[in-house]
Image (cartoon, rainbow, N blue to C red):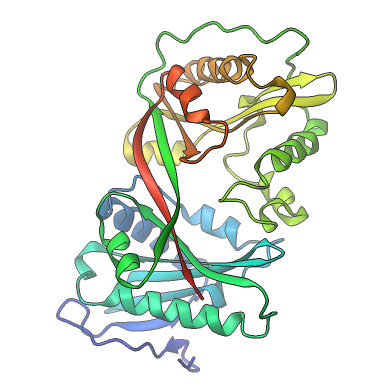
Length: 340
């Protein structure tokens, strides 16, 4: 591959009818983010995934205080000057012994079927190999990506290119916010409004509970991500339900509402995420009590449904608790890996 002075990049690709005249270039500036957001929505929709990344989401991911560089991590594909696809990569330290090299390729549906997605995936892989070339050979290095588990274009591309399932995630939805049970807190715990002085305690408790989850990396919980966390649109401490054992966090539901996502998909959905209970308080009904309080608060904000994500292999079988609280599995996502 070579980067020319024009910013255009040579990618091994044989265009078809839809992709005739395709050109590949590097990121040019914030104006690209809006087009990337549009491509994300349409590409994910074609793969039956109801997600959204706004231009502001991209700005935040590559913004001040992060070590990410869009000029190196993004590659654009355009036809007739219009963006039709883009590829992204990022490298994370999963643990001291494992390097996780994430990649994803978004392509508008009308430009699929002619090898464009495959070409960008292979470009990503070469870029990641080059980026980690000087790192210790003792590390386990893997390419990493995800797709909806049911048949779709991106899943098919990953499997064809040699990626294998590593773990699974359930998306669960409570389709209404009716009949929310009244579940008291276990004795000995208290609730209070969250203040700025609580942020670090909630962060540290979350880190302790989630550090060993498959989606978590060492960098997920570093100081830079702590600072970034407090700037994210989903940072809504006024919606959190935190149970306190004295001055220590005993349990958490860190809810938020994604208003832009709701607008895009025509729904009123709240997210109940980062749900955990510390070991001493498990089995005492605390998770259900906090979830019930979160659902009531979301209903009070005008929401009509709620969602959460949970790993298939959750060691505490949390999804059984969620089912008792009215959530039902609606989709499964597979996280794929391939040796680098």
